[in-house]
Image 1 (cartoon, rainbow, N blue to C red):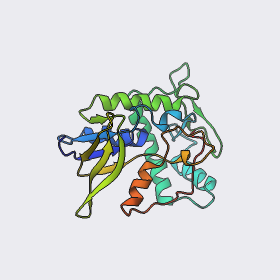
Image 2 (cartoon, helix red, strand yellow):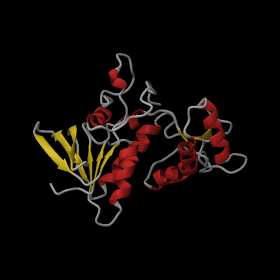
Image 3 (tube, rainbow, N blue to C red):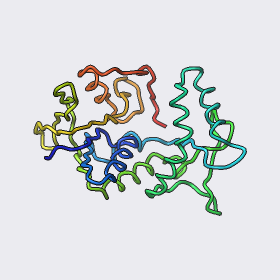
Image 4 (cartoon, rainbow, N blue to C red):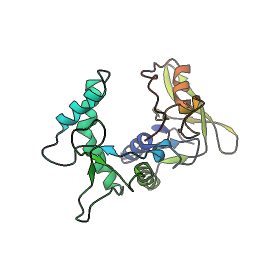
Length: 232
């Protein structure tokens, strides 16, 4: 296999969104590596909706920011929250453009719910409680339409480091063979590690592989004490 410009590890909403966008860049050679099938990411387990300010007054991104900071009890990164609330509507519209179908009323307006911690209705759902399934479906179909190399049922073992830079990964492919996938850039979008606990509703794939690989090459992890046991 030729050297990729970008190798994405993980096929959830983060990984596939990055892969779809990168694959749109002319000449960019993109690969997606996932240890299960492409659609078997934790994203599809998400039942709750997507919070984004899609309506007009009286809601606003400033109010969304205030709600998020309040619910965060002083632990939020202000810059990260600002990106979340400002870019959230843009990303939702990108998903819609890719074919994601969110719930609408009879007049074709998106149904926005008000849920815990929010002062205004701004939660968008798909299929009631099947938001993750729909988001994952749209992204899988989108990446399959690109020229990205899709490596399914391939288990990443370690990051390759050469000359102080990440140069790809070693992995076990679907035939049980050890392989190297080389890339100029590697994006870890491997999700969490809920399966490290004896009681969790996280899927079997949520074993923290990406975090472990990062630690083994000296990367720093942050906020690992925050574990989502029920992925909604």
